[in-house]
Length: 247
Image (cartoon, rainbow, N blue to C red):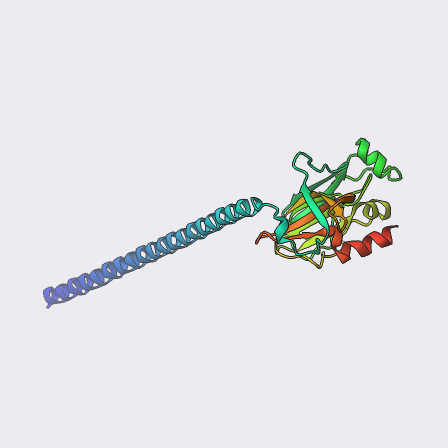
């Protein structure tokens, strides 16, 4: 009787041991499986992130390539959107417009102005403005700024209009003289007559009489869109109205 009891106890202990051993290995396997799944998830997320970065890099390269192609668009006087009756245009190939002491840096789509009050042209054009501006953000834009351009239009000594090409191809402007005198550092709005603009070019404009003889001449700026069509900004009612209020 005692031997059978001992045998039963031993069997029960063996069963308990086997159950415990099995459960232990099940738990270990469960943890290993969870760790494997967690590692697989991290690898999947990492691969997805790598693919996202590669796609962005590819898109960025495409944008840069398109930008370069657009920048190579040439002025074609036969593709003028503005009225050019009795006007002859010639490109100022050797003349590069300077900033007149207005230095604009674009950071993440936002322009910041710094003035060089020691610049001789600045002293001449903005003689009343003595206080230097340092890294002042210009605000009020409808979207992000892609680049800016200093546009001189008219005759004689002119303060430049600052033209901004936006990410959507629209153009916004600032009358630099007004901006500095009024200390109003914000966009004056869109040049309504143009869209999909990729570049600006300064031109000599020459008015011709009915016989083709030269009359008055002036400097102007054309805005060129991605299809190569140009618009003479001196014909822009937006800028003409602003010029009238400047006088």
